[in-house]
Length: 420
Image (tube, rainbow, N blue to C red; front, top):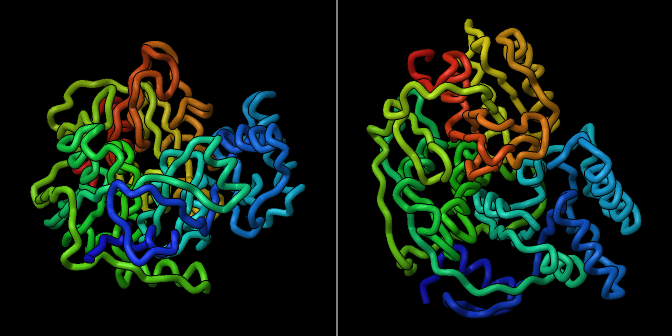
């Protein structure tokens, strides 16, 4: 029977020739990702049940990332709990402060996740890892506890939606704009409990790190996973980061999909998702006279080196508006160091922006940019729900790093194309 890439990966990891949507399966896990927010509750669940083991310490990757550095005693305790657990079970893949970063970026950057693998984490954006043709799924802390102890996880085989994207992107238009357009059509529940498989000439033209935005934000349409069939770019990308063997799995040409959505992005303009849903995408020309107090470039969605370059290109020769606080957050320590070598950090500072250590920080209203009542932020993050970045009466607008930078200069939502 013809199979999608997702069905093939699942089948191999549960010892079957093939699987079908709706089937309940128990799969073997190649990687478990852990951070300081959802892993300590999983550790507690294990302890309550008298379990003091991990299935394989070499298959667990750990980094503190949501509250880095710790913002208070509670977050310090979470980080310490994680650190002590790592030491106790001799988990070697631990990225402590100084070589840390946002978990999803760390995994891909360091070659921990490869095509054909299965990875779970207590984090909804684990779907990010489909960018290299892997199966990545977010699970709850109780399920995470079971996975840590057994190396297995259960779920129902999802249906797959094929999202085909064609057309050449214009100046000042990026993968974030593409994703905001897709979400504006699918809605926040248009792919609930399904897989979004991205195909098309636009995907083929994108570099792997640009594709990350699409798999990362698949969950904003309710999807279990966003995935892209590996190509030559994928192979080059992963083999520069790992010498481990992997399975190059792809969808069959006649695989069955629950639906087929087509998008032509040839005439796409920069997009902005207005409060308070990621699906509220509008062209930047339709979001007029919206003043902003804060601008944030970063997160697991748009904190890579290419994102920093995009923002820096807009800021070049300009300054952040006197009424705006601009915060730039490289996703990992490696990206921070590369941006330093390229002079990007100095460029941000010269433009009157501030640069943070890698952290999820303001994306989830953690720290390093929490909003007060009535404040408005434009960010390259992934969610703009009510209260997501701070006070329930604050607002978040989502956009590409370039649009965020242009808005920081103008003091209001702005089109980046005039600065490029």
